[in-house]
Image (cartoon, rainbow, N blue to C red; front, side, top):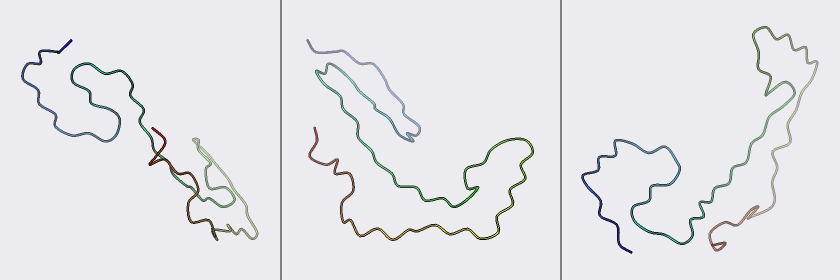
Length: 72
């Protein structure tokens, strides 16, 4: 059944879904890769991190890690 939509103003979209009208299936897809060394994701009001030597291996020989283009 068609939907009647009035005036719409979208200022900005940072991610997510905008849908107008009827739909059967919505499947948004995204993938990211994050590298962090020792103490990289610490959060809080007061943090003390003592690292003598820290290294993060970012060598990635895979061409495709998580294919999302054809997975509808």
